[in-house]
Image 1 (tube, rainbow, N blue to C red):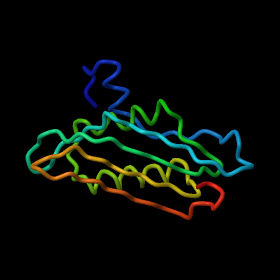
Image 2 (image 1 turned 135 degrees about the horizontal axis):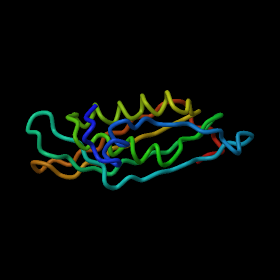
Image 3 (image 1 turned 120 degrees about the vertical axis):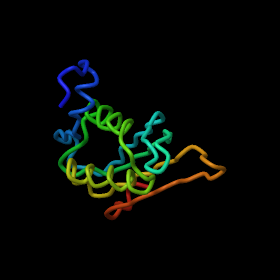
Image 4 (image 1 turned 90 degrees about the vertical axis):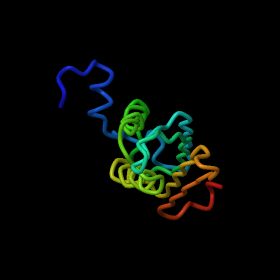
Length: 131
């Protein structure tokens, strides 16, 4: 790692999702996040791609700690990823962190080249009482 990184950049560079104990483990409920300032780099052009990332999930024993989510999402700003790849990568890391009963992650990418892209991945079965 680059030792000359400033404190905030160093935190982002080392960011990982962290799970904490679910305070209401005895019931099913939905947690939703919208992250409107997501950025990654296009692997073809190296131009930035902007998106809003939407996360909904029904937790089991662990929930994601919000500061870790913020830093983790900011980590992508200097990384090259296709839209489909990055949304699936976020899902994979989220599953490792929290092991939710159900999770849906959607990347709603800004228009590029006259094309609007949305990528949605779902894992698990949403409990019927969580609609």
